[in-house]
Length: 299
Image (cartoon, rainbow, N blue to C red; front, side, top):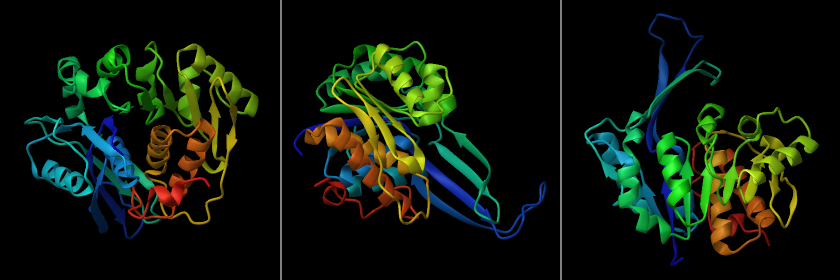
């Protein structure tokens, strides 16, 4: 695709350790430890690149081997990171300790570096953002950065809300072209628990009034709810194989953006998102390396 999409968000090194036996507190536990590339913005960028989208990724890198590893991977995928911020701060890391069943016991993230993506930096990149086909942001960014983008970027903005806690950063800010929370994040945005289809419609109406043109609320194994001025409904497709849930939401979000770039309506874009998420669920990686545009296209 000739047009490009800008992604602004987190890029992490993920360190995951799974114990061989039940965890013992305050002791050393024999475990299997893996190191992988992660971060919502980075995952979204990789998915977009694998779907054939010309992708420019803006994040903050430290001056360390972790940054080198992420940049090298992005380069091999054709993702342009040349406009990212280079700093002396440590590159973002996410540490996860799992019990012997593979369930997370505790997680810890160090994403302070993203606070360096501030108004001055974003102002220097405004021409790049405004000329993009779409701009994708995640709520790992600071409230001030989110506010600047929403108030100054004229390109269609897509928001990945990341988590309930980080969704709180959007309170009081301007709406956007598209927002994709899960059901719990949507509840935080609208100040209510969403328990029924009626609640989904009510939540979407509130978000539309807050300035969000397209609302997509993911429902886990129940698919996704979508709403805009032209259509409203649910899309669902069965996942036959689930190896790992990490990254499924990021792949859905990327496919949603890809669908927009391709000119699809919101329902079709959500169907593509479901297919992308199902492919990710069937992989042991946060991004399924076998994902392609052909495999998620609704025919």
